[in-house]
Length: 517
Image (cartoon, rainbow, N blue to C red; front, top):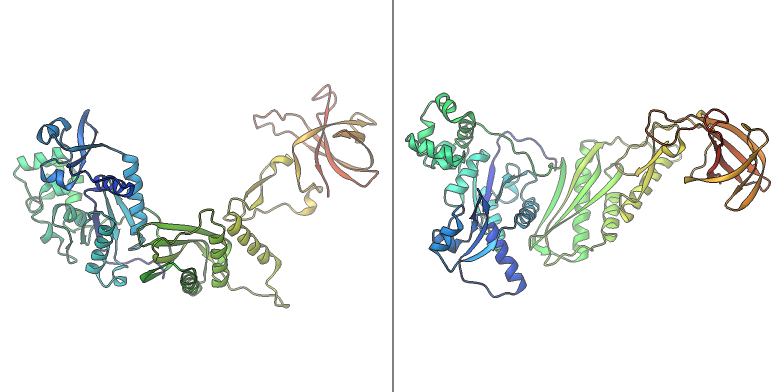
């Protein structure tokens, strides 16, 4: 399918209130440790004091809420269990949940530190409606031992406020945000504790109290950010999400009623998806340059592989072959675990792809064959391994070309073959010093010694003079005179004299820079 713009947006807010404590409990369970029945709290330094930053459900039932000073919490519940905060582990976990929630929609945004926002307008029909999608998400997270609070509304801020300040599972019909959020406390705006206290002192305790007041006096006293957040919670205005990952333009996916793990089932699914995706690309006269294949495991693990193409690709057979080669070349083989319950192929980068006009002999041309060879090599050995040379703006031979990954870079326009004398395909890096004898100081070499062997010049062409790049802060500050030399045995060399007699150096040096085949 092609990702398009939708006039009516719907958002699902996901809040994981016990993210840190449930992460710790999952680690303990995986290690086989006996569970500790004491209330679990996580402590960290906030505002120059050691405070509770996360608490489990048992601890919250005892009044141990995040933000409480640790000394006060210890005085209330002496037998509680204490763990140190691990922000890196929490971030890694939320990143994994991000990747897992990609099965519901490609448009996701973070709601730090323990939530996500999903734009589900174009995904609900795949699950049978909003309620079915939300139930599926909550049940799957519960199987992974996460407690999820959710809400759905037509603005992201309304969904977030309802998900955190109302019982889980609230679904607000489009346009009814004002009625459903009116009774929420002013803390649902999350404008900060100072503003919340000031609002309550002014007698404004609920969203309805604020909505009944003129906006300009509120903005003048409490700031425009408060009135903007109020309008978003009431459903009056909406701000599109900034996706955590750019959503693909084209993608196709296959969901399985029962997880699949057999190689033939996976190959069959990939074949069907490749055909559907390339058909969608063909209808738009587009082709993919970068594809991403995502495998969603039943236990929540997501494995993604990237397939690159040097040309806009929409041939399903070629795409399937590149995917197969990429899977075969993985250093860490694809592990289905308990099976995959969804597979997706997405186009991350696309371009115009006109129909191919074959020649009179029916052949597609050598250039396309070379591109296909590069694609296969990159799929097997990695995109960074296969290189191509691109031209650079320098007269110095060692700087005239740069090796870059062959995929994802358009070939540069090289000068015509007659624009400069021929040079060896491969250069010695760095150039190797040699001993040379010339008939006159500025003349070509007649005899030289390189790597212990002595060579007599029979044919000489040159010089090709290259001035130093004076604008660069380099030690290469002398003129080079290049010569193409052939010896008595037919061997051909490319060497140069470094410096001009009497003008740049008292003693010039000779260097071997390359050998012709």
